[in-house]
Amino acid sequence: MHDERLDTVVQHLLESNASQVLDLGCGGGELLQRLVKQGQFERIIGIDIDEVSLGQARRALGLDLLDESSRIQVRYGSFEEADAQLHGFDAATLVETIEHINPGRLSRVEIAVFGGMRPRVVLVTTPNVEYNVLHGMPPGEKRHPDHRFEWSRARFRQWARGVAERNRYRVSFIDIGDYDPQYGSSTQMARFVAIASNENN
Image (cartoon, rainbow, N blue to C red; front, side, top):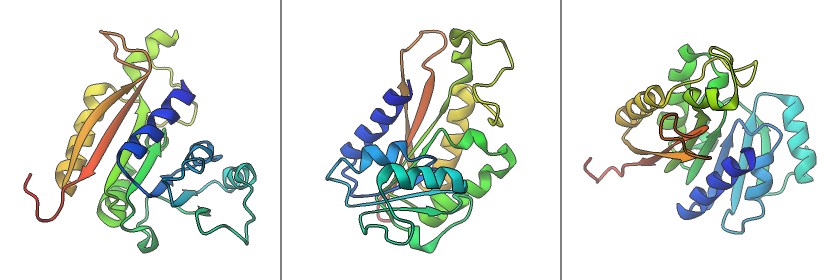
């Protein structure tokens, strides 16, 4: 499932014609390892607040802390805070990250990512809590002990549509994994595309 999720994200990035990509909450660098294999991506930056994970990512990518290549960088940072150096990238990903944030802080993520960094395309994946029953999980159990929430499809779409409307993006939704008519897919993804300043909604 994890491989399918990452492969789906990479495919959507390729189809978006992005050449500069941010991986926000890059963890140990699994997505970065896939991105670096694609010549289309000319500049790749991963950020995370976990120094241990950043060390794992650097080792996996063969990066030296003081001598990172111009094409790919891994750096300490929070996607709850806008960074002027990260403004205007073609695309950004938040893969299985938002559920690790307290819901009351998601507005900070929205302001930093969609308002401050404002990538042309943003891909956000998160678990679909409705599918947990098909994973054999009892009601109320979360997939990871650090998850602050897990949303239904309706709740995720409500949040994503609000973000899109407030920040001049269009949003569409993609199911990742086997699809069940009643419960949907295990992973849900929102694909945001910025609306140009000279373009009407």
